[in-house]
Image 1 (cartoon, helix red, strand yellow):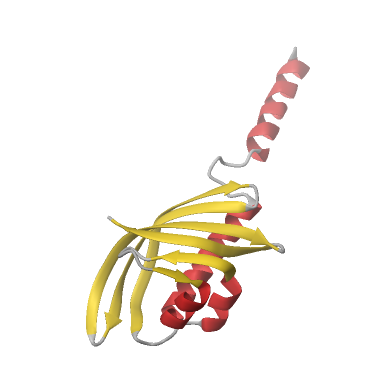
Image 2 (cartoon, rainbow, N blue to C red):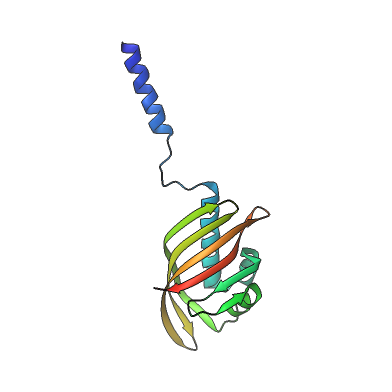
Length: 146
């Protein structure tokens, strides 16, 4: 009887200590989260090289005002220097992996300076990332007003 109790306790401890929490990210989820964060930093730095590396050639980039851009249009606009992010945060993020695609939703808040005027921004973002040649690339992005 004593051996059975000891075995049961050891088995329960092994299961409990070896179990990962339900909120732990998969490898792909963590890689997508990192890609989103790298993209956020590229927006702050107006970093053309990072945008080139992170955006799929087929990318469709939708703004909350309805303007749609291709990869080239987005990168040219984002790196023109006409607008500069003073700060930029992403919150309430969710990531769902679907095959070679990832659906990301989050809330973007920040201050955008354009022509000497600072505009506070708070919008929702839907991102679609696609794994291409082992790397996560932004395939589509659509912002929406909250």
